[in-house]
Amino acid sequence: MNSQVTNELFAFEADHTWVSENLEALLEQYPDQWIGVKSGQVLATDPDLAGLLSKLPDPAHTCVEFITREPLEMVL
Amino acid sequence: MIIRGRFIGDAPYFAVHIRSVHFHGLVWLLADTGASRTTILDRDVRLLGIPAEALEPAALPIVGIGGSVRSFMVRDVEITLASNEGDRILRQDLWVVQHDLGELPPEEVSRILRLPSVMGRDLINRFHLTCDYQAGMVRLER
View 1 (cartoon, helix red, strand yellow):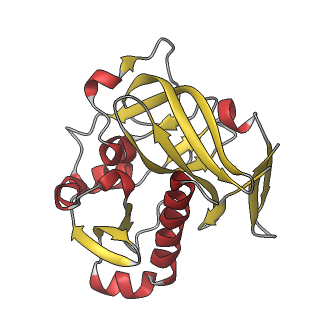
View 2: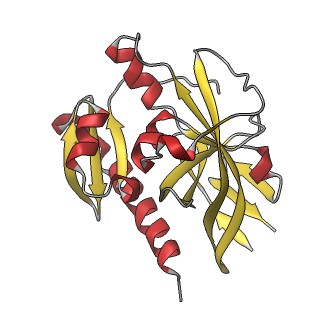
């Protein structure tokens, strides 16, 4: 039986999978916006991260993604 | 014991739960064998709501590529990963890096906020890391 934390992690991963699988539709609806997703539903959107966080009841346990077509090359 | 990660784009990530006395929440960490320390970056600082009182100035300088940053430590953080045998819980200090965003144009701020937090060698090297993009496999084993 999974712990509560494991279940939270699996749900968090599932929401990111949902975003990946629905990315084209999200790009049409929310271009260049931050979105918060939980249980496969978009809870809130905002072009500014601080604005999004103010709309989310529990940002620390929510899948948050920036929806954009702009590629980001990273060298960390 | 196997902890499964996933590729987001072409980069290997692990979802973790982080808990300290000051905050807790869920974070994606980019598995980064080039980073010596597991480090929380700007976006996740905001998402986790890490308060200023949790941050100690880092004792050692952080050197990276690009940008002006302030570096801190959070002591004694509990990091939980989901494995095939249940929760795998680690305790260690975490590093926190915050870019100086005040003088930057909004589009540059947005790019910096897209940067992921990283899982460094301090955590990775406790396990065997498999990262095989062609096979779609990323995992930590012990």
